[in-house]
Structure formats: C-alpha cells, structure tokens
Image (cartoon, rainbow, N blue to C red; front, side, top):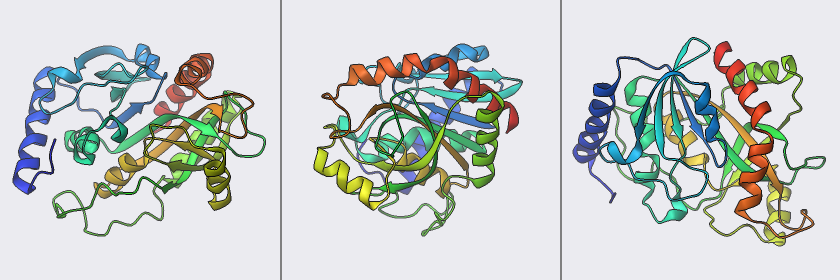
Length: 278
C-alpha cells in the first residue's frame, strides 16, 4: 500500500470494516495481536468466525513462518474478542501504512483495548529463554514513525501523548494474572528495530545500555497507532532466546517458534485470565 491521502485511507479502512462486519454480528471490545509462534491461542476462542487476511479488502497476506494470517472473532471467557493470528512486518518490504492498517481497522471496528504480543530476544540480567515479559514501555528504534505525514484528526491528535503507552492499570491486571496462575514473569522495556537481521553483539550491548530489556521487530508502531486512536494497550513478549552476545549459540527463527511452543500453555492460560479481567 503506497502512502495514501486522507480520503483514500478512510475509504480503504471503511471497506475492510464493512467486509468484517458483514461476516459477524459480534462487536468485540478487545483486540489481540498474536506474535511469532503464539497463534495457537485462537483455539481458546469460542464460536469463532475465521476470516483469512487474504479475503479482507486491503489486508496483506502474511509471509513469515508462525504467522497464519487469519482474523478470528468470537468469545474468550465470555468477552467478545477479535484476534489477529499473525501480523505483517515492516521488514517484509511493506509500507508502514500497510503494516499498521489492521490496527486502524480494529480500532474503527470499536475495540477499546489492544493486547500486543510478540517473540523477542532477551538481554535483561536474569532473563532466560522461555520467560514471559510484561512490556512496561518501549523505545522506537525503527527509524520511522507510523504517524509521519498529514494527521487524520478523526483518528487522533497531531501530537499524541505517549507517557503511558502501555496502560498502567492493565499492567497491574496482567501481573495479577501471572501471580494468580503462579507463572514466572519479567517486566521490562521493549526495543523495536526493523530487522530482518538479528542484532549484532555490539548492538545488543548498546540496546542494553540505553535501557532495553528485550528486542524485536514489531509492536512499537502498532502501539503508537493504538494510542493515537485512544485505545488502551497491553503488551507481552515471549522471550524466545537470549540476544546475540548473551546467547551461547547463533540465533534462528526456528528457535523463536520452538520456544514459543514450549511456553504455549502458560501464555494461553495467562492471556485467557487477563482477558477475563479486562
């Protein structure tokens, strides 16, 4: 999707919204984006309506392993949800407008809360592969911002506040879910880079020095768009591996998806409990 003007973008968003509404009568209040290897959570969605991204006007297909590319609408713990089983990434060669387009659509559909999940490399002291980390804040190192260009005032202000990018009340509820279910967790700052290369050991040392606890290739731009449109945001990272220079071996996407599968049970149980508490 090339950079669109105001009217073109609204038209494309409305086309997608109208198509999705034609497939379901549900009105989800909670949106969930599932990261690499975490897509099995959709099995928890009762009475699901499954819509492939490729069927939705102006959505792009996913190309990365571990991202099935479906929109799943139904209920979790009695709450109506809309779940993105996978996402597009900036490193796939898409424009930023295309990458954040689905979040715009979810907001336009009427969700009030967006839960962002991802797989990330860990660098915080005491962190290990398989940990789950509550995102407290992020550092945007992607070299761009999804709000560059003319502001669409119907969506939000020209200069949105990001002092509470990840909602503090939702963070507390997430902690309560982890504690209740006796699942080990970390809290920290997520650094968002473009990828697709994994970071060098020198880059990891730099990231750790500036305050990052985990690093990945998604999430920050989605969080920015969600805040711009007035959504409450929560974030969970699955620490799929230790970052370069900390990990004793070379990094691979297979390790990312394999680790996500190993923590699947804990991730699913925490996310279900969290959704019920929102």
